[in-house]
Length: 414
Image 1 (cartoon, helix red, strand yellow):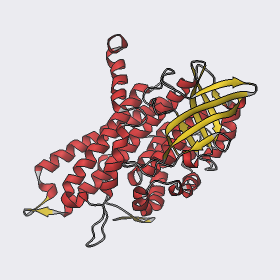
Image 2 (cartoon, helix red, strand yellow; image 1 turned 180 degrees about the vertical axis):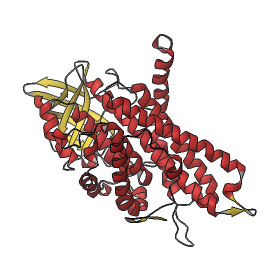
Image 3 (cartoon, one colour; image 1 turned 180 degrees about the horizontal axis):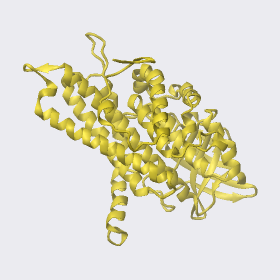
Image 4 (cartoon, one colour; image 1 turned 90 degrees about the vertical axis):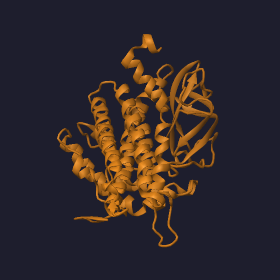
């Protein structure tokens, strides 16, 4: 345990204090990082064990944390002042930095309540027509509503082509009638609104659905390997009426709206992976300095020195990539390739560092809690939570293909 002027901070010393150089970070981003870290250390860290091991249920949704994140001003960092945001020069960079800090203690909170809420839903609302943006984005920033982002279906997730999708809408007087089945929908069990990608006459459309309307049925949350606080459920839509003024993107523009939000989400997943990897690295470094075997500290064995030197390089590379991708996004330039790189490297480093951190701890790395003295092991949840980063918001194999299309050219890769 370390201590700051604000009081005790749960966890080992941060090696990033020695390895990370802020030379290229804007001061506003450093300030946001300090703000997010204070929130994470004082609000998330004391509850991390409970949050990261919670069993999925609608009752487990941490509504109090939505309000706490909003009250801490963290939802505001990604948006302009006219909707209640901070109006930062580099809003995506700030939002990604918040994700790293939240993910250090609770990846499920970061993924569900920040990546899902502030990036996927928030970015979609930010790009919506002015009446939708002006009504709903301030509500999200204040923590007054919970949102869901619905693209995936039972037979369409990575492939979101109009041919693969089965959720459709039909134009009727005054709006649309929406019917379909969405799957893996984060926060849907607690959502007030949902942005829905659907197909109208063979063209992608994005609609805003009021989750309290008739014709909407939300299933019980899925039981997952990890990331349990990110509650995902099936959503059945049966002849749901969506008024014309809730059209986020008209036919022909819905997929672009979804992909733009997903690109921001992929940067966020990269940052979240860095947060998990940094936490695992810090626990391993602390243990290697305390635990002895055969008369030497574990950290004195060259094998582990070299392994964690490689991890330090990978961590810094992943952090630099998500920051670069975010800066490009903030410049207004399409950052799809860099977002893909950030997601692949961030999610990969989380899995690899968590695996080796468990190995360093030996038997102590494999427990959830030790009956003899009640100690708990945060690496267990980091290991479980890290894997999903390589899968969701576009599997890493698809991200590698999209990078290859830029690097080698579409005439070769297709």
